[in-house]
Amino acid sequence: MPKRSGSIMTSDANPETPMRILEVLEPSGGGSGRHFLDLCRGLAERGHHVEAVYSPLRAEETFLRELKAIGLPAIHSVAMQRAPGRSDIAAHKALGKIIRGGGFDVIHGHSSKAGALTRLRIPGRHVPRIYTPHAFRTMDPTLGLGGRLIYGAIELLLARLFTDHLICVSDDEYRHAHGLGIPRHKLSVIRNGVAPPPGGMAQTVRASFGIGPETLVFGFIGRLSPQKAPERLLQAFTHAASRLGDAHLVMVGSGELESETKAAIRASGLQNRIHLTSAFSGPQAVSCFDLLVMPSRYEAMSYVMLEAAAAGKPIISTDIGGAGTVIENGANGFIVPNSDDIAGLSAAMVNAAQPGTYEALHAAATARKHDYALTVMIDKTEALYRGLTARK
Image (cartoon, rainbow, N blue to C red; front, side, top):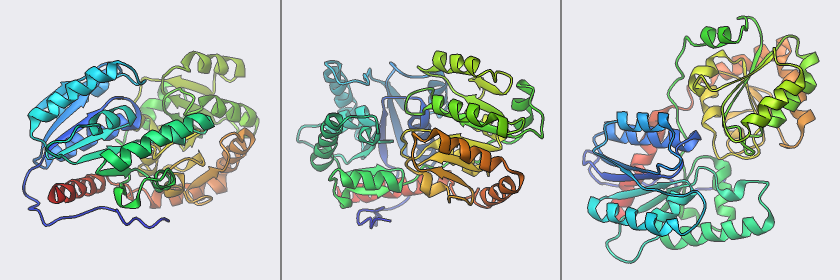
């Protein structure tokens, strides 16, 4: 594990003094949206003045509803496009106006676009800028060498010249950031935290698909996107189906690969054992799973993984960011070293489904279920903010 000389800073500032905090996010879905909501809510509940900026271009209805329900003193809408373009100029001006008029002590940008726009600034009154990538673009194994060089150079330039501190959500992301050349003293690891998933939904979710209480269920939660690789899970399950008894696969999510995923389910001939839905949230659905399967090509620290761990579920995952943090290979789950190894993923599912093996995995997962509390994430982020405001 790397030495983190820049890890969480503390200060002698009065811990009772409220801070004025601006949280900025471009995408609203997935783990970054969940993290953003949890952070805004947690800091506001501690008495801080928290304002939020979101982009309406990709804002999901559920995200907006939850954000408004927090009761923040101000929520700002700024049209931020995901891809670089001329629209960034207008978005940067709009953010600048909010920042200049807010008297903020800390500005925290989440994900690449909001992170870049909140950090780029001209000289003037200095307000500490914090950046959480929620998975660097350069962590994508499908990105070519040219793309890695370009995105890596941009991240390094912004980190060295415009960033007071960068928060990684896993040790893997920390190692990747340092590998890009970002100095250790500007890096900290603050793992995402989760509240315990709600109980009592397992029977409801299973019943909606006609799955009995004794049937083994593999689960998937995530966007139907190339990053999450749902097609690889379908291939692995189809390949292993004859050796999995009457086990079912429940996939929760939607996205750009939805039509392809539905077609693959039909082509598998296992429509009675493979179920795709977006009717339930991840925390609701995880209670019906016996094992979570994550075939992702890359992650920083998946909320889905943390939710499953908090629910005491064994996990089968490719070797993505955070996997080694949550999974002890062979104890509370299995890590498949190569995300392209569909046969390896299939074999891990068959192995985990064996009665003796599953019982051991479940016992180990249950023993670790209290390790990822949401309050720890809020505590460490708040301490980092205070340290930076003291240095300012």
